[in-house]
Length: 100
Image (cartoon, rainbow, N blue to C red; front, side, top):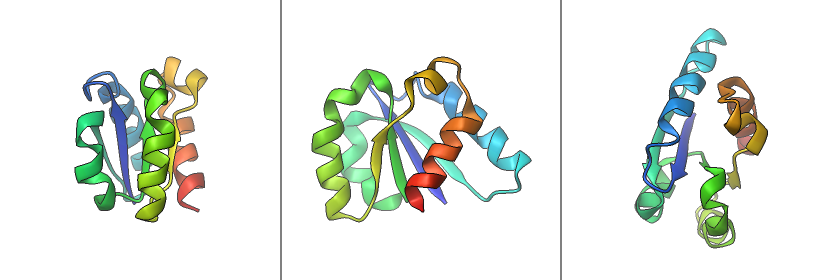
């Protein structure tokens, strides 16, 4: 599975990416997880199974959900509590649930 996290500059989600990779490895899941800036979303959306937005860019949700739907890629905002606690396992669960 391929998961894209996107935020203002791709930096604030980088720690979350590492926590999610660790959680995926502990579960034996084959996951590619990257963080990029919102500016790269349109170019990258088709390369991923799911896109999660950092809470600070939730204002992009409606626009990105529409683009995601056109490409059969679910888009959602990362759970704020999980994001604040850098709970990689919980955010990984959210991504898996969205992928179905």
